[in-house]
Length: 121
Length: 98
Length: 112
Image 1 (tube, rainbow over the protein chains, first blue to last red):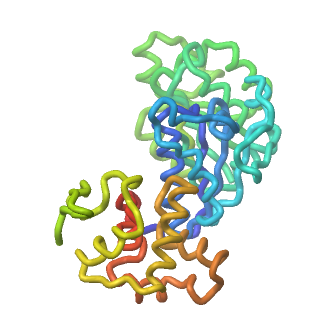
Image 2: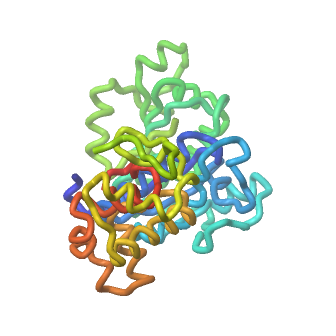
């Protein structure tokens, strides 16, 4: 078990239908269960995980996006999305979570730099 | 807090390097390993140098030589794997871009 | 511990730990049968948690780990029932493990 109280960042860079995205969420929930301060960052293709109106069950994938709504019960309250990544992909800020903070590249980077452990998926 | 950015993929193939450049700050360092060595010949490498002229940049010498990537010493400093391990202790955290 | 659940003369498939394979086959009458295989009798206090865990799973598509379970319970039932001590008294083998079983849900993948 982790004994330190390091701040952990999960950096999500994979699109919705990708095993890595599910693993990223699992890692976040495990850290949350151990009362580690954990933040989620969505950059590049990762921002797609936040978009509403997705239905991955159509292609027989367990709907892990629904699980993201339970993050508050794991004390994961800081969820950041990269504004440039959304803009590059022509995506609107229409998310299935209501506490996503959209940051420009510099603020996104600064927020990430506040964490001692960064895991990229 | 400082980050050691370990870049493993080529920008000619994947987007990781673009995200790395968007994230990196002047006090961080960049290490090019595996196909990441090809980024030395990508135009984005110059973008990085322009944005952060004094940033520390390293590459794994063997990995660059294996790929016939020619590097001037002013661009990047050649290191061996053992030095990469040392670098991970010098920075607060590490991101592997792959 | 049995690995076969008989209900209304039909065999409901379970895994080797006695958890239902298909959570949609569950109904409330099965909960006491599932509990019986662990020599447990469900009181109203147990039922409260079993129903809550079922509801949590249907909403979030995951079984809550113990800490998340207590936090979620707090918002619904208040402080008293939201302690892990209270939950462990009800479910000595582990609240998340046992309550999910009687609620017809898969064994939590994350063991806490």
